[in-house]
Image (cartoon, rainbow, N blue to C red; front, side, top):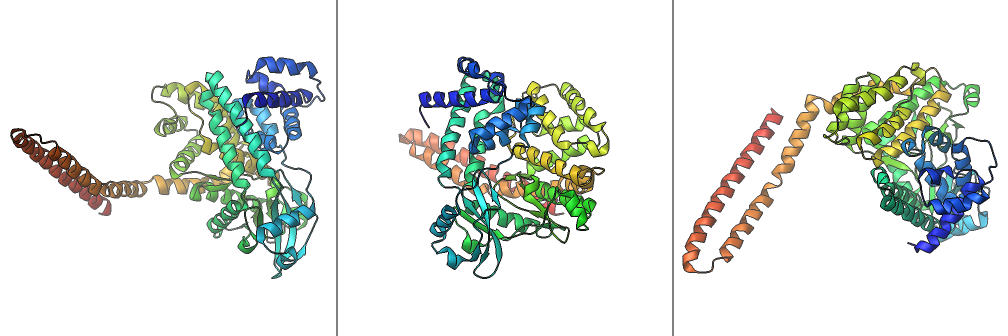
Length: 512
């Protein structure tokens, strides 16, 4: 990590750029280094009458790739920056000018250890997309397969590492000087961002994510994932099957091709449910540029650099919470938070239920097609500050994905709501995973897990006995110790027998 003087100079540069775009409110609201902010405010020259979030987005775009990623990350935190700013930042585009085709070819040849003419029959020097971390070229392999080749930007790792260290330094400073910020876990948020970015910069990991995602979704109707060409993939190069189609937000283009937006929405909603609840592995960058509709009307996913994971406990919590809100059972929603340990038992359940109702009712009173579960989750993050609910990092990417998915669904078919389409699927999944059979299975699994500990208990008992035997100091004391050893041995022996008996009984009850 760089020294503090260098970091302070970087703060001055960042603050100066924020001032140019009239976006210093981000630092002012955080009460971060007020003296520095006061200094750079001298040069503050508002350049636009746009909303604060739009001005901040423009400033982050000016600051570069790492700050764009940072902006996309904090767009999921309306509790930190407010709903309006979060909404504006969610539209922050990750686009940069492309680097040269000559450099792209050089990187491909170095990574794959072959001349590019042997790897590809054709290679299009004009990239079809260029973002902060990589750009994409169309090509045709030597076997005649149309592919999309993703190539990392030169020296991108060093540039990101420098900025991520800066973010971590700022987050650590905030936690030390602003006690109220600790609940929001700024250091953990930066570490999550850093992990996500570092994953994106090893394209083998993206290839593995694409492969896993493809396997998971292979049986889902109306949803396609491109195949990985492993022979043409390495750390800085990823080659995927080229997928043709129309952007999912090009409604006029879809209709002209005879596609049914309502059917596409049904496919998309079902696929999103499958990703989140059934597999707990979901696409976390669902902007329209990453979703196509092919000639068969199927949804095609692209770009697997940002993926999210949810363990089963979190998925169960989420399913119950969604169903609770959709049915307006706010007491149940509150209970779920206490059961999951997200809210301390020391807090008032009655007051928390009242707070849940206060954010749920205004949303659920809207017409069905306007209900946004993603925004509801955002409101929930805001309210939890009063009840000392710690930030759940695993839900941040999901909330962002929900927001994007809902935006796409409204463009596709404004009169439908994706959550109403997915509700029967969620209810079926929740019933299957929360019903008596599922609970019995969980108990049986826990019993088997405890049974595996028995040999370790026996081994520990033998160790205790051996230790007692070694402590014998004289013959007289030896007799006394022998009785103690015998007593401990008998106690442990019967304890083990009772434990095994209980485990066997529980297993028998589950199997009956």
